[in-house]
Image (cartoon, rainbow over all chains, first blue to last red; front, side, top):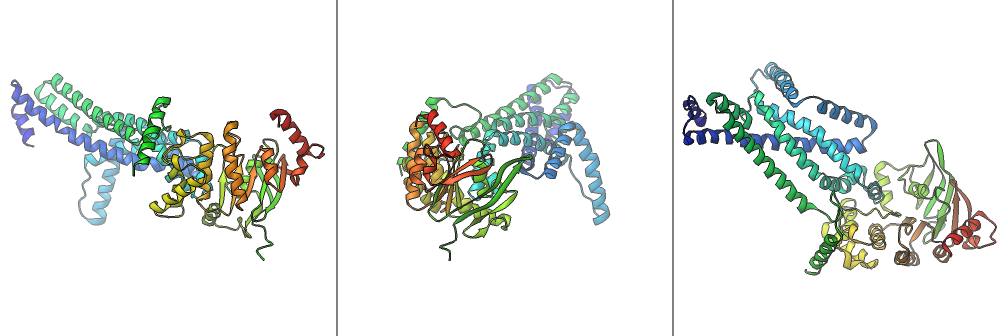
Length: 266
Length: 251
């Protein structure tokens, strides 16, 4: 809040670089909010999307229908509408109910509404990523696992998902970069993330270009960091012959030599 | 008493898929240590039969008995335990692509049998040793030849200590020069007393090891008997089929 008042004081004329850097810092601190928003939404999307994809492939008919309905709904409406629906609809309802039942006030934050909206929508998209990965695996492996005595759930968990997740990392990285930029919409609810702070500074100082340029840079940096981190994860979890990139013969030979060498040393 | 009871008995099994009869009242039984070979044209129901034996496909009618126990009467959980006791080998190996050879063998020991990791890995190494692949334990399926993959899959099945094995054309996807190494392992297994039901086109190999050839066509057992039913002049469909196969392969 100090930064906010500092920014307000200098709002009439932003002339010196020192003043700009102070308000720029205020905007940049929004990165923390944005990062938390994305971390929450991606996690929610993963936790819901993974089982959703599994039941879409392996579940009984009626569960498959339900999953399909979920995906169809959350892919079908804009994030912005979803945010309003959750914040003004669902949250108000819960708060009222809480008041009636416990005779106390419950405050659900815009931040929570934003995470929910982004996360629920992301779950729909992520489930399709994982579903595609599961279906791209040879069906025989599931059967082989069943023949060894795995339950359907066990086969999905120990044989299919470890492969599907690895295959999904590049697409997941794409989902991250899309979701990150979708999160800018959260400013409408008053979540103090990058965009809300940018709009505030821009409209009070009229230095629109500088602040929107700064916001662009911040989003770019967050995208870059996330995508790089996921690429590193992809490289770390890579298994020869599995995944999106065709292996070149010489890579295979090199890895084979390295593995055999490693196996020799105790 | 258990001496007279067959180890594995398939009793009047039928299977209909999309209105088409794939298996039509198939019965057979294996005594302990038997190797029986199922031959016949593709699409004749061999794979479906094998998958019905361990209830990967539930037969529409009929039953399978392992050591006298009815598979049809088992709960879902018991079916999973029942499958553990029957090893299965597939034409296209179906190794788990994300696991090295050792872990392909160890994973079911850990996750199905609940063994400790160290113990499971130890057993996996012993099984890989048995199929002659101890030195390839760290390699992933994509780094193994077809013959090596099939041997890993044999090790994977054997690690579960099965009472019987089902082999679904174990050499059909292999280059001719790799077939020998797999057949060697299978022959050794049979000689060591493993009960096996194998679908194959390797008639020469089958003839040497088995007491009984089962010839299947259009979902039915058309002929069954000692290997000599395959010989030219045998008169039956099996001999005819063999003669055709010999024309193609020159054997």
